[in-house]
Amino acid sequence: MTLIHLIYVSSAREDLSEAELDKILASSVRHNKPQSVTGMLLYSNGSFMQVLEGDAVAVDEVFSRIRDDPRHTAVFVIERAPISERNFDRWSMGFKRLDARDAAAYRDYAPFFEHGFDAAHVGARPSVALEMLINFARDQDRGVAVLA
Ligand SMILES: Cc1cc2nc3c(=O)[nH]c(=O)nc-3n(C[C@H](O)[C@H](O)[C@H](O)COP(=O)(O)O)c2cc1C
Image (tube, rainbow, N blue to C red):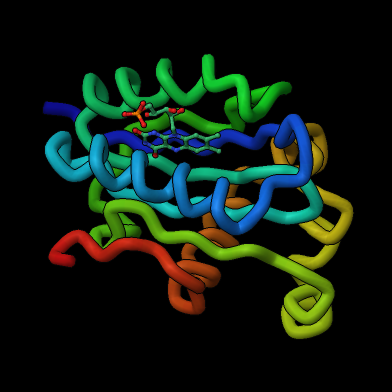
């Protein structure tokens, strides 16, 4: 077994309602839990950033389904790399919607998300992307805990 993480950004096809985001979260947890995939999903200004972590086979399988999901487009992988330990082991999938209050509270990260996640900008700094995901996981809105 090889533990990896995969980080990507994408654009939502349309601005998604809370109910639609809840649906994505519910199906994420249903599939990720049995495969021991953990992670964090951020939504900002019509775009997503997500990290998935777990066994390489499981992460690649989950990601291949996500990539083909018609609810988003322009899916760009920022990083897929082996890791020595999980950073999101508490969350089958954590979730946070970022808004102007977060941009004011997290000034260092604001350029990465306040106009939506930009693949070129985020892709140039994958370690900042990961650090940001870890920070927002501590402050998440309504993810589903591994043990929930
Ligand atoms: C931004 C985004 C993130 C998603 N994250 C996951 C995920 O972590 N795990 C997962 O299984 N499905 C995820 N999905 C949903 C899948 O693309 C797919 O719709 C779902 O797995 C299909 O399962 P279901 O038909 O049983 O709901 C995500 C979808 C989107 C748009």
